Length: 610
Image (cartoon, rainbow, N blue to C red; front, side, top):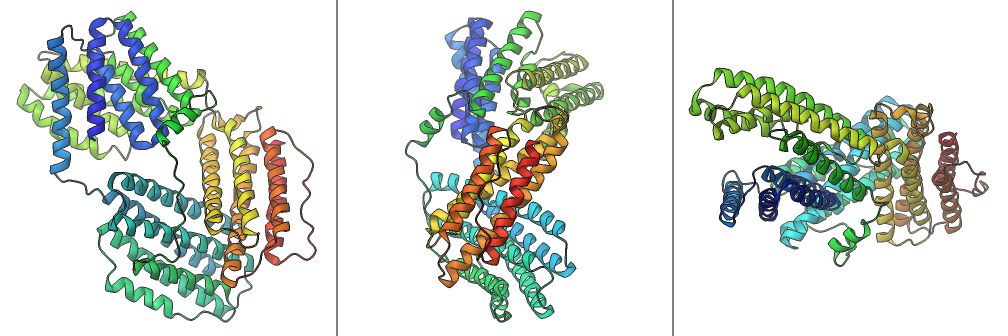
């Protein structure tokens, strides 16, 4: 917050001074600030938001020019005073504990793991079909992977700010435990799906009892983390009941569930079940990441450049047309513009609709409220409502924000027309939203359907690397864990692109017209098969580790080579001959299952390419 206060003060001061030097100078400096602010997307959501708001501060200040050093100093002190006041309130009034966001993120991961266990229990109870298993994996695995990555990002930020201390160390142990549980559950899913209806009723009942008890333990752990409380007697008793549950003889499902109980016991006793995987460190990460993305191939670079061009264009257009309160249009472009069309157009629509309806509400409030006291009393609930709905709906956020801005302007500019201000804000917001959408469509458009093919290829390559390690003998634990995580993230990213492609109004057209629906179906099939391949790989890897069995490096290399050939065909955009898959003679059931998924992946890739 202090960093944002300093940067936004400098931006606002630069905007006011450059505005006093003339709008061409202000437009050029705004272009540079917008480009630099857009590059903040490289460093996470918090920096992205701070960068956008700093650019907004510049744009608004440029419309309030100062023409002397004294006026500039006064302006800077007023803006800095407002930032410091907000900072003081944030740190003293209902302060958010610095560890709370990390705790909540990790609690969400354990809650999602509990939901995965509960749904596994449902599938065992219903004796579900192959499609039901696929839907389960697609919904719950993605949710768990995203929640674990959110917790990881929150903990990395906390680690940078606070260093490694006892509280952070316990959270890191919790994160490693969540990763371990996720891997074990993926292997368990794969085993149960492969067995289908084959487990005897006692085995099935035992697995269901253990899954239900595991869900109870995970949910209790999640609630304690949310409350910031240490493990209590209820959690320890629930875990003891899970550990005491007998597993069926020779039951790999039971072994996996007992391994999960051991991992939880290690976390609760404040000792990791195994040494945490080392996190890669990169010297001068800020500059390395920045320099690596200062090229046309970078999505963030193109988005930052597009935003700079559009924001500067709006400012020039507003001055040429002599639009009053033109910074509202500039703000709309800054806040609506997103890296992809699929996320820009709904945001543009929400901002335009929210501004128009909010303008009508502002006009009504201006008509019924008279005097500064009435306006001030109305501003307080409007501000509360604006912040309350910010995370719920962007359209509602803009709806409440519009009358809030109009009433604030009315307080600072006595005698202003409420209806005129409301109409002006609505017009400028609609104008900015339309320009942002047009820019997303015309200036180096980022189409999700066009990127989906490359994302699928990347996911195949990541799963190939994981399979080669998982089926190999004596694979390095840290390297295999890193490959498993990379494969999961690649699948999640490809699935997100597939969903964004479907959300585009023209997303079903595809890259070559009229084939989007077929490609969407083929991509969905490929992602389902990748999840099953990951399950087979994880099951083999964990089974080998538990029983000290050697792997089959030749099979792993051949399987990975075949998957990489399918990925290369997707990257090239044209079909290729069928890869040389490993021969089926002498393969174990797990190897046959993995090979079957790989062959089906080759067919799905060929169907995607048409």
